[in-house]
Length: 446
Image 1 (cartoon, rainbow, N blue to C red):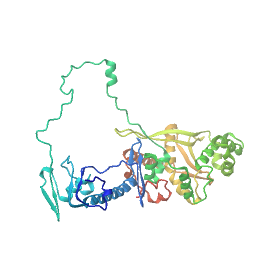
Image 2: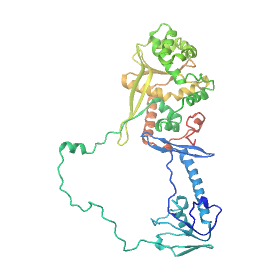
Image 3: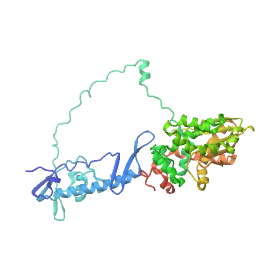
């Protein structure tokens, strides 16, 4: 008798072959990632609670991987069944009478054999002989004898019950169930809602799965949108934005804008980037310091810079959480006539041709700032403006009562969708946005 693996038996033949353990289940792998040549890699991604969930790309590639794995199992079984010259003995322990509904869902080779020979129901009901062409299957059952001893009783299962003893009050309180707390509110930033309006699937990856966007991908995203050369790689666009926002904070208290710029660079960037950043930002800073927007800001009675707020969009409705708009407006101006002005500074790379489109992209964000400011200060908003630093251009968002009401309804509609949907398939993919998306490696783009 020779014992060997199926792979070792390739090319050999024997008068009688025994293939044991047919009931062994196919290996079910719990993969974090799956790769198939030609299709790429699919990843499991964490949701808000940190639980790994299958992305659409993962499921698609995993199905292809499973099909390839089953094809390989069929080839291995074919090798095993063709090694015998006269007789082959298939051995298995049938622990259940259930059989998979089809071959695709088969859990092991025993399921395949049942389907192949049409064996259904309990093994006791199988015919003694079943033929498939010139191949005949002889079924021999080796069952447990009827008089087998019963399973031993576990120790302690028949002990008499002891009378219940009252616990001390402190122990009772510590052992009592913990009362369920109200669901944690869902906080949405205005910029995230704008991202949802642009592409819901991108929002899902960024804010539900919370996938990080590599800095170089974010920079490439902006460069493709602008159709122009990006800033030197030594200074990330985010760092330039931080430095300019610091400049805006310092400027009102300085007579010379260049002094404010130097101070902002020292406050925001490491020393080795000061000179390079100054060369980039000098034109931006000088252009803004001479703008009408800056003059109007100085004429306001007062202002708030980097104003943080929270504005409730939806109340809690068990088991759904409350939804709050949470963000930070760059500047809130208090005009002499008792009205408010909202100013948001943007360092996006863009062209004059794309200015209108980019302004529309930020409409909901500025409307959210205006709604929050009205609610907190009890004053009407007179204007809300975007200032695009690289272009030196200001763009105005309509904040009439009707427009703000429409925007608030849109924000609440989006908030209602977001708190009710946590599955990737619920978030549509805007195909027009795909060339600019940093999540192409996990999204199917459909």
